[in-house]
Image (cartoon, helix red, strand yellow):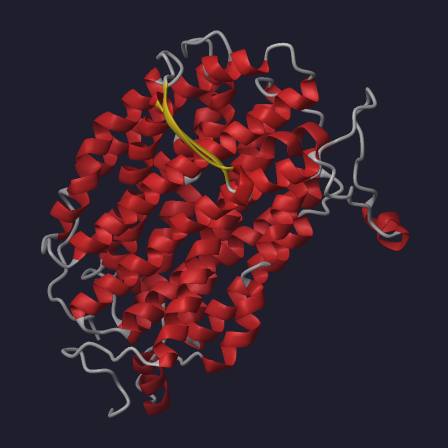
Length: 497
């Protein structure tokens, strides 16, 4: 027992501890990096691989499929990952899940058809879903002292929003480098092309296809590189390892998280996790489909050839995603600061949930109906970071990102405190994967479906998506707030044994 960290004394920040924090931060960052690739690359991907144009039934159908099927696969296999986290150890599952999603994202850049892209997005999502559960359980047990644990979980999860910011930057860089002819078209070797087919190079009308979205996908390989070097130095969770060696580690069970003493916790957290993800997927991630409808974007695009219009719309979408992720990063840091100060978990959640009930639906309802005034702009194009346009719409999006994304960090702090060691990964995986991935992400499909209905206001595809997103956001925030009154408060500050 001497090798176990004291539950009352903060852990010393040795080199090994710093390596732990680095790899956890990289894992959280590229979780979101991989996920937020999809809304940025989906429009050109569908145009090239299935010939679907925005606003058509074919486009919205495939948009729903690409959002939901990988999320469902990730949630399903993420449940197995949570079980394996409790059976095989936190470190082993963590490292292999990162390798899985990094390699899958890289290979997706070479997709020759929509089915290949769909399969590789599924394996990417599986890696992401497993990594989140393993990382949260790992960190919580490595830092048992409450205040230190809350800070570590809060600040490392904040890197998720840095990952979202990085993928927007990477997409902008890829678009600019492609437009400047610095990137070569991707071609498969003949041996692989004979099996998979060749990568489409031009449209039926003879226009060359952009490859920027493919290079954005391929950049997802980055987290695997430091992991190869750092992995041998990473320790296993001392609590889990000590119990395994002593033979006292109980066998995990999915039924056990629905036992009478945990049933309410599991059901409520699963449904509330679904609402948190519903706001993100049903509203926030619709931004790339909405920004082409902004008056200033349409004005800037007037008279340009179609390929240039599409590139410009993709650039603006990446710039608005950066602003939203800056808001999410701010929300995660606020959560980390408040987590150890606000004792009640409900009140901590309400800090972001209550303003979000009004802010997010109103912002999306008004997104295309306001004068999108540019207040100021940060131009970092020379550093290949691109622009940060602070407009009326993007500032509203900043605060939407703040109140939505902060809730994800809340769940990472809350869930380890309500499940014992042998069920920690399993319990977290039920809430995160059934609630978040399998139920919550379906709201992207709900928004896409609603946007096709005649009773949704709007004359253009971006307008109808914006109104549909506002309706979905209002629904999930209200349901989440109502459920919060049933959320159990953790019984004590230390992790349950």
